[in-house]
Amino acid sequence: MNEVIELLLNHRSVRRFKDITLSEEQTEAIISAAQAASTSSNVQAYTIIGVTDPGKRQVLAGLAGNQSYVEHTGLFLVFCADLSRLKEATEQQGETFHQNTESFVVATVDAALAAQNAAIAAESLGLGICYIGGIRNKPQEVSELLELPELVYPVFGLTIGVPDQENALRPRLPQHTVYHENSYKREQSRQGVAEYDEAMERYYKERTQGRTITNWSKGIADKYRQPGRAHLRPFLENRGFRLE
Amino acid sequence: MNEVIELLLNHRSVRRFKDITLSEEQTEAIISAAQAASTSSNVQAYTIIGVTDPGKRQVLAGLAGNQSYVEHTGLFLVFCADLSRLKEATEQQGETFHQNTESFVVATVDAALAAQNAAIAAESLGLGICYIGGIRNKPQEVSELLELPELVYPVFGLTIGVPDQENALRPRLPQHTVYHENSYKREQSRQGVAEYDEAMERYYKERTQGRTITNWSKGIADKYRQPGRAHLRPFLENRGFRLE
Image (cartoon, rainbow over all chains, first blue to last red; front, side, top):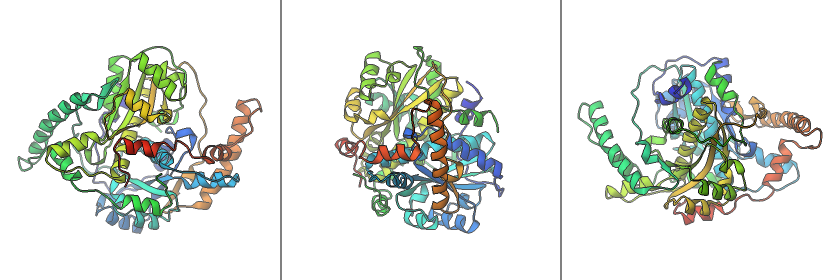
């Protein structure tokens, strides 16, 4: 164990921040760290929009489902998967640009790797972070607000700021549930989920003085018994992505 | 600047490792770090297969395009996006599981965030890493080898080990190319690419004693003038993913 791993293990999402804007030095260090992440064949298929404008932040907070910590935070970043830069580079060389599900995955993963580096850099500076998947609630409106061109889509937001709360660590699935040696072990995974359900039931009970009786599986069922964000596929097509 | 950010900025991919297997403690710390990454609504929609079996590693190295550093390394991890655990949990509660492009993105991003934490934990232990997108060359064969169930797909591999080479840092796009304030700045991005093309032409020339005359845009055009891994979409459908 070392200090870096301790920092990683100590992660918890922060959802209330002091109204302190990040310094230029902090922002630059965080974005530099994002850029240093691995990228598939060096394509760097992402763009980060740093939203500092208070009006835009307020609109984004509403679009993301009234999450006030999008508005009241030190910096709000929108991580976009970006094939438009690759298309321009290809066409500039007189070639036709080809895209498909593979390039969609590459760009989405590139954005995520960069974001996780940004998150860790921020936390190493004593700041708190929270990923905001809620910007996919209204991706068309977010894209218009940020003037995203075709072949660019907002994957998630990342809110970064000086924490104004202390959260408890949320337990994760037991390690043997998500880590398997040499082949996928279905029984091992099932046992892990059963153990976790018990642990999470206790966790929720304790945190709500017995008012909330639920567990992980129940929460998952509640989420996936109806389709979530069914607009995403037509939105992506509308932005020029071909998921072929 | 602090030590964590320095570690992040100091990243370079390693493609030659000593034949030293990771200790159990190292593996456990790396996987714990992966698990501590943010996950969308705590769904933890990924599974990591740690490939320690030398025979399987050899087959994987071949499938990934004869990358010997998949075989000769300290540990080889395959990060899988996993909706199967969520489907089981949902059905166990007597509900019908719904999936679409949104859940595909969630699982892919969850796998990537976990992987980047694993990569950083490994580097903090003095180990080197390289992402292996090449496992998407033959995803069906990889899935069979690792006995992945339906609704699980291998997003990429991560090879981790004691470095047996020292690589130079590869320059990234200028920061203003990938980081824009408040809205997408197309001209700013184009200027950045032009600067980067010049820098990369010098970089390749110097590294090859003048033999390689290319730049970033030319490399991108070369890659995207034909469709890459066009099998990915039918493969995903075959594994039960609905990209609707």
